[in-house]
Image 1: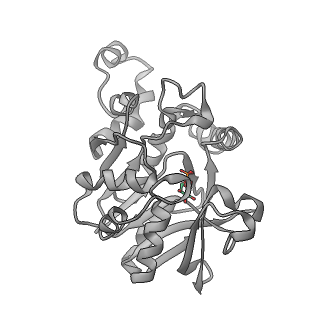
Image 2 (image 1 turned 180 degrees about the vertical axis):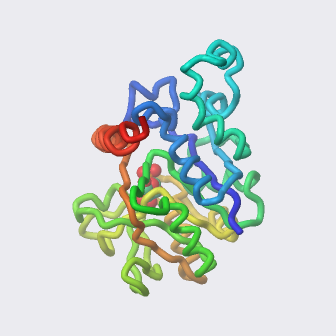
Length: 277
Ligand code: G1P
């Protein structure tokens, strides 16, 4: 059974400067809730109570967010403001949070390998918090993937179709379709130019990984951009055994870009915030 969810959160968020100069991009709010809180809620919904975060310099506020803010909470105790904290308080009581720091930014694969000390020898989920995933009609994306893992017992990446001219923003897969929404991966390329892309099926920031991935990452040479890429490690895993790509149900917003962030804000305001009031 998968219990742990890893959040690589050491990146600089350069696409969001100057907002991210002194603040982690994972703490940018979508309406009134930081991005990483949406990710933790999705993990908890999927039954993952052990939250592991790979942080870096300037990321202290993530740890503070999932903790008591004693003075402020004392101040609003018993007032009509207290309900604003209900959501995050229930996450704090239902999850454990552990942190480790990535000292050098050497890519997503390296960040995941840094998390090994928190994960150990068990399958785990990975959430890239700046990919906000919402399914209004049923299970969240991680929950959908956990159900698939229970069937396939191998690493799984979430994918979506993107316009061919956008392949250079993503890891891109190709494979054999084994159900209308499931592929067995044959090939995977990190951020290919459209002319080199094996398809338009792009990996988005949700993964289930089996623990053999750690040794594979440790042996993976730097790839695209001189960084250690999880895509390259997964490609090796697919050659050795099996990796599944899953076309998830729901919406995904690239909140690392200003456009995606605005779309997510409008969507959440209309569909979650307003209806919650
Ligand atoms: C990372 C991965 C890429 C994946 C993307 C999803 O890239 O390297 O394969 O498609 O996340 O958001 P990044 O966006 O961190 O550059």
